Amino acid sequence: MHTVTKVFVIINLVFCLILSQYVWVSMAGNVQWREKYENERDARHRDKDLLERAYNELLAVRATNQESNAQNSAEVAALNATKQALEAWKLEAEQTARDAKIAADNLYTAVEPFNKISQDYNEQVVEKLQRTVGELTDRKSAVFADRGDKLLKVAQRHNDYAIRHEDYRRVEEYHFLVSEELEDRLDRLSRYRWLRPDLQRELGDNGPVIFGQVQWVTGNSLQINKGRRDGVELHQKFTIMRNGTTIAVVDVVEVQNETAECMIVDLVRANVKPVAGDQSITRMFMSRTTRGR
Image 1 (tube, rainbow, N blue to C red):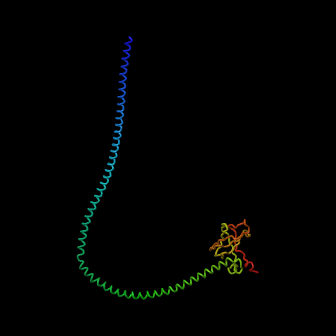
Image 2: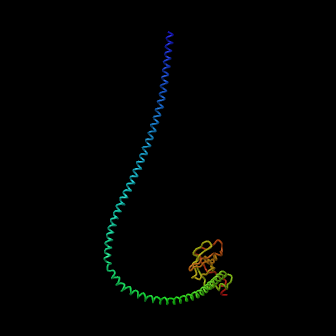
Image 3: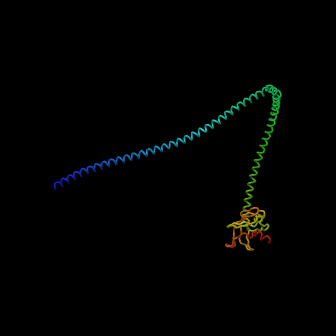
């Protein structure tokens, strides 16, 4: 019994060995088939990608062909329109050529008697014109001679005018220099009138008193409502008063016809400055205060 068991165990071991070999062979075969399947699947994917790429290229080429066909159709339509226009122009040109031929025939018929007309024109017009031209030429020579004499006289008078103009320019320049000297003297007199009473009398500071009113004040400048027409002069002094009290003394620095701009030269009190509406009066000069004495 023990021997049979051993034989049975040996048979089982042999059978298990054979079965294990079979399993190993099956597993090896499955691995090979799986690799083959994966290779075939990858090949199918690559073929699919190539097919899709080729299909996309086909669609792009088809779209390009359709666009080219549309452009070609537009060009063909434009060429057909041009052809029709050229044919219409050709017909018009042929009609114009026929009309021109008819007009030329009519013109030839109209100018056939031109020789007789030309002969009569030469006899009645050209010869008379030639005689008239000869007479006008003689008159023209006489007119040119007279014109030359008059031009000579004009040139002589221009020369005299130039000489007199030079004299006038010299006199004008002298007058300008004298005027500048006079203006400078009057300006100096007006600037120094306060130092000498005789200058005040010479400049007319002893005239009537000018009453005015301050229109506006800006900083040290102000404007009064009296000007050149009222007798205001450059560098003349005015006293600014408020309620009968003197506030400041101003100097006229610019004179217009109706107004005068002044500069404040003296303040009675530093905290009281002129304002619009204050009264202005010509300053009482020394010569004016001593006039009656």
